[in-house]
Image 1 (cartoon, rainbow, N blue to C red):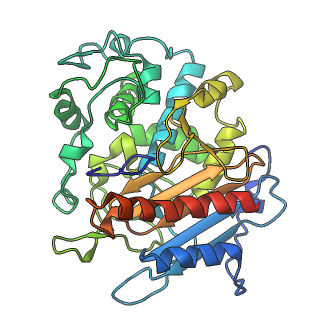
Image 2: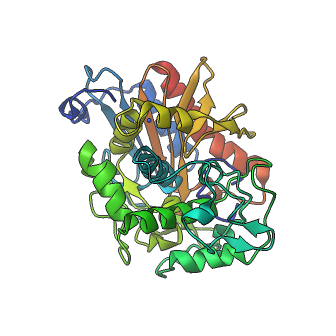
Length: 386
């Protein structure tokens, strides 16, 4: 768990007008269960916590809260519904574009990646003729991880641009972890390959494809994949923090997120992420057949969320109150997000401005798990409230 771009630890709208969602209630001063939960995350050590809840019917205003300190030095409050780095939630956007290309007849899920990217995915036990597009989307390819080497030192890579092909070369220098289809194991390398696949088939950049196929159609004004060389967050945002060499929290807001690229470099507000997830799960972005494929999942549970499953860039979470929520989640130095859409269509996103392993000794697995659990529990409780 050197870098947590993954959805796990140790390491999802119909024809409702967006206007109804844009009326975010930020003025209420009364303490609510949501604000209490977010305050609990501050008490647990996170600098700031932001949350957005959007109901399915669009008849009630969206609710957004922000607590804690958006700037530890000045003590300034975090902006409500501010822009944050959403880490591995990026994978759901990338998977959506891939499945749109499936709908367009340009990709077949069970076709080997060699068909589309000849001679690219090769290595010790790695054979692109045996790895399908589906297996890349679902983390069942057996490709080794690149991120634990590329981004082991978050501050060291903070201002470094890294080309996706160079990162893929790092991964492919290692042997396969297992044979394709043998089991599930999260690897950010899968989504490097998928990003390259999108660019090869469309002859356009990944950020353009996400923008034109998802962001613009949905009117997501605060969602984007940073362009090469872009290090600052564009809109109002809290500062992100990571653990320094001596254990203190250091700011890491501005960074070159190229090390994450198609696996985890996107930025969004919590409400934008909710809107995307609702639109996706309501069939606005994909055909019924492709959405069904996206939700066809394999077991991917862990100590944090037993019974979890992973589809094609989408994770299913059993709720404590019954039913399954669909979402993802993302970790990147400076921010952790957890998000899902519940069985009734309510979407919840929670973002905190430091990773759990920036707050505790990451070799203390029990303490680390407890930090992760507080955010997961807050998501589960909020979904079960609605």
